[in-house]
Length: 157
Image 1 (cartoon, one colour):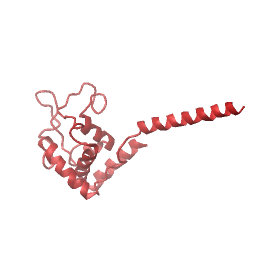
Image 2 (cartoon, rainbow, N blue to C red):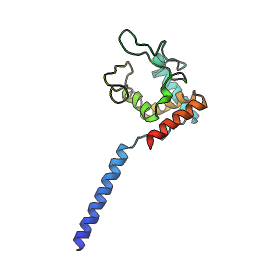
Image 3 (cartoon, rainbow, N blue to C red):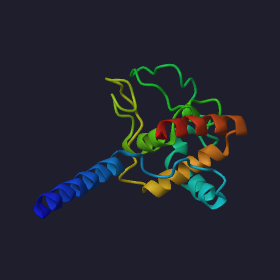
Image 4 (cartoon, one colour):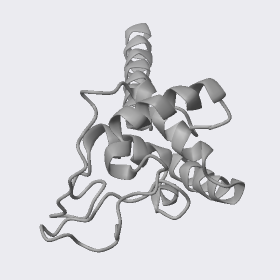
């Protein structure tokens, strides 16, 4: 009788442990919301943005001209990251993924989509990517930032 209870409880512990591991690997990583209130993070992100992003997305986050119109190669120009773009429409986890892995068809882009957006996962650390996003978000008006926060928090539930 004691052995049966021990086996039952041991199996229960294994199942609970496996579920906890699975849950932890499925949950989004990183902060729940990248808050641009951290000025040291924003300053760091501004420098990283200038060195890695501004060449395409603009020094003032304005994007490339006619960013909604396809170029001759069928790809879209780099969009702005200011309030006029669509960056703020996406949750933080997706933004991190886009910077880290580029635009991946079927994941962060429509199937078959081709983009000039490089993957920065081998260039920037997760912390540096978060800093860049904090900088970008620091330029948004409060209403835009709040809307993006709501999108981010909805996707974490």
